[in-house]
Image 1 (cartoon, chains in turn blue, purple):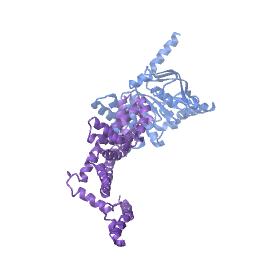
Image 2: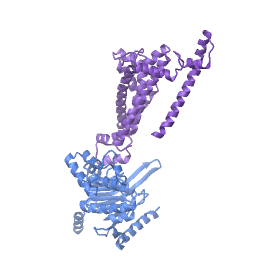
Image 3: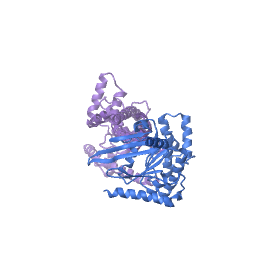
Amino acid sequence: MIVEQLKDATEFHRVEPVISAKNLDLTFQTNDGPVHALKDVSLQIGKGEFVSFIGPSGCGKTTFLRCMADLEHPTSGEITVNGVSPEEARKARSYGYVFQAAGLYPWRTIGGNIRLPLEIMGYSKHDQAERVARVLELVELAGFEKKYPWQLSGGMQQRASIARALAFDADILLMDEPFGALDEIVRDHLNEQLLSLWARTEKTIAFVTHSIPEAVYLSTKIVVMSPRPGRITDVIESPLPKERPLDIRDTPEFLEVAHRVREGLRAGHLDD
Amino acid sequence: MRQSVLPVLTVVAGIFVIWYLASIWLNAAWAYDKATRSGEELGVVALVADTWSQEKPKLPAPHQVGVEIWDTTIEKKITSKRSLIYHSWITLSATLLGFALGTGLGIALAVGIVYNRTMDMSVMPWVIASQTIPILAIAPMIIVVLNAVGISGLLPKAMISMYLSFFPVVVGMVKGLRSPDAMQLDQMRTWNASPSQTFWRLRLPSSMPYLFTSLKIGMAASLVGAIVGELPTGAVAGLGARLLAGSYYGQTIQIWSALIMAAALAAALVAIIGLLQRVTLRRMGMA
């Protein structure tokens, strides 16, 4: 008993749960009857982890992410973000959310777009300028502050939108298929950049994707989900080192993890 | 731009030809009548010459209208009661005031409809109903009622302009303020933005293309409103007054010149808004 408590305590110290979901259920009422978007989803995400959610469409990966962001409300179950409810976490601005589309305002410059959340949150003018410069540096867009979104490529726009999510001091980054609309080459490059950004900022990242290589390459933990009802079928702790050059994708360890993800996805589909 | 010059000129020339022919056809009866009474025989050339130069033709020829416009604009002092510029200014001032009031009212109602569920359910049917009432019926009532409470002059006419011009602004702005998509609104929510921050930073800028389209329609409607508003006041001043006075005395040339002046005014006002639209939207990266 004591040993177990001790073990729990050390576990807690090793990975403080930043996001914790317990028996989460979410049912949407639609005209075709209820849709079970999430069923009995439990998961802990520790500080500094990079967690990917992968699964076919309708598996609830985005819904789960939206629950963390207080954009969706679970029907039952418990979820905490930074130890408080998602709503409180949202009001405390504890996370940055990156959507699939960059969603930059065409009437604002790149700098102006990144300043937008800072203006809303009431940072001082001086602070705003400093932060914009810093995050632009971080996503390698220094010098583009005065440009308008239409002057940038799709990949650069998405980087600007990541910079915008990083501009305020949220230590959680929620990313909903941020590179889904980009081509393979740009995507590889952005993945590499994202990893180095993660290493430098030590943020906790939850990342939704439907690309197996992307999930395996980026994550310390891969959550495999399957649809009808949306649920977690496998959680894989990645054995890959933190330092990951692009060609790690050809190593046996990488392929093994990718294989296990694929098996997990297939198992989810066999239930249909 | 250059390719369109020839087709445009061709159409204009076509219109003039039809206009001249129509004025021969419509005015011929009076010309024959005159000739019969004076016992003259009318040749083709004499007939055409007469139909294009009558004093009160059924349809004045283009050059008659042109001469009338020239006489009443360039040749007259602006302060003269017979100056078309003077009358245009009277109408224009009511139009602009009404347009400003209508735009303000339209935007205010649209904001209410977008942000307030009760207004969303209740206001729109009334807005639509207001436009089904013939303006010719309600205009004299507005003038009479406002006169009774001591308001006369510019404001009653501007009210009628407002009555016509707020409608396109409401419809356009409701759509415009609702144009941000779910993702953009979710994004604001993740930043915990207040409703007013969402309005000023997202909804209002997003609505600009819709606003300008509405303003063009509203401006044209506003001018119609001002002219209609001048009819029941007894034809004192303004383009509407010129139309009414012209019809009392059968001065068709005066009516047509006022009509063309009104059309030119409307075209110029709409063109100005179009220019503002182009400049604004280009600067906002939305065009």
